Length: 470
Ligand SMILES: Nc1ncnc2c1ncn2[C@@H]1O[C@H](COP(=O)(O)OP(=O)(O)O)[C@@H](O)[C@H]1O
Ligand SMILES: [Mg+2]
Image 1 (cartoon, helix red, strand yellow):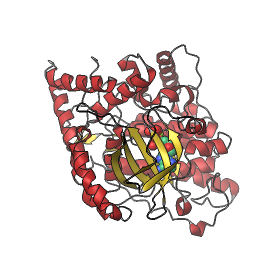
Image 2 (cartoon, rainbow, N blue to C red; image 1 turned 30 degrees about the vertical axis):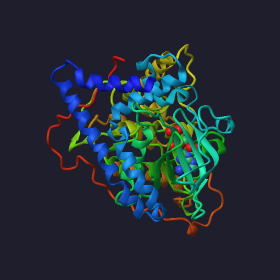
Image 3 (cartoon, helix red, strand yellow; image 1 turned 90 degrees about the vertical axis):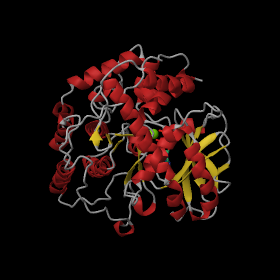
Image 4 (cartoon, rainbow, N blue to C red; image 1 turned 120 degrees about the vertical axis):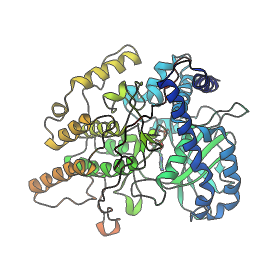
């Protein structure tokens, strides 16, 4: 019900807003990005059937593609998605203010604890809502164990019964009926698919299948091992400098690639990074594109606009509390997360507040007071340099990923000098004894072209404004 209200109000706001100038541009931008998101869906079927795991799925996939394109989800725009985030959270919390709840977004539970809702406790507890099917993909992927549960859905471990390969299946309940609204899983699938085109990159998750069944939408993807949150817990809540510098270097690679595809993540937190399995046990994967969106559309960077927080308050950038996000905000959040990993805390954790709104305000104020280099006192200088550099970027400014990566290489050199032994790329403290020859080598560093490289034109594309009149 709330979902419907949010979407229709977003639609009516776009259609009937009396504002001239920028707002009419907003509508144009919204339409443009919707079309862009709809595009890739049409290309899915050939790609999926070409995928080795999905070859056998030619039947179901050919039925899926029309189903997906016929679905309202194909028209999902990032800002419609935000409305859905709001509405879904409203549903779970009862009678809440839309604006406020959008602020907390998917991260309501993260505000207090910074912890993933995918804790062991949650995974073991009885699920609320409809039970997911016992298998998806026409029975091909039996679901075996729930791995995580968030505001919107669940992630299950399963098996591909044809190959015996382990897979992970992310499911969300789907609204039915003529007014049914899209799930954010469609958007996530489209982005994951785009990220593996033309080739899957190290540190990104392969995605095999997207479908609908028994009142759920689901995607089937490569199975990964443990999240950085779990790794942190294993290590007593903190990582050493070597581990953090190795991770920092990998994360710059992930964001360089993500941003090169014109996508920002918007929900950086340890729960959204997962280590790989087998020969990729040392590769840190960026997951969960449920809040991700395009920042560069039709050859132009979106313009800055006021906005409320999307993401996780504990790690988010200062500007994300009040403005639309861009590349710099992903990187600043990485900086906050790395400090958290090294120190086990941040100054804005556990501030006493009566309400969520008040806590958000206190967090924002404390972040503003905490200068980058002061936050990093006691750590190698480069962590403060990284945070300072990301906080200094302009909204549309292109980050220099090579320079940022160099900061973590310098920390590694410092560790080498201090210990007298070389730092190896697999030496993450939570990885036990392993034969380095059994592990994939890290890809060589390549500077990737960003969408605005060579683009000197003025930007007139306005950020689609969220409707706040609901
Ligand atoms: N590919 C995967 N393999 C194994 N576990 C996964 C995978 N993807 C997600 N998970 C588990 O499910 C949790 C939630 O997944 P995520 O995509 O972040 O969903 P949410 O949108 O609910 O946060 C993760 O923190 C992780 O524990
Ligand atoms: Mg997540």
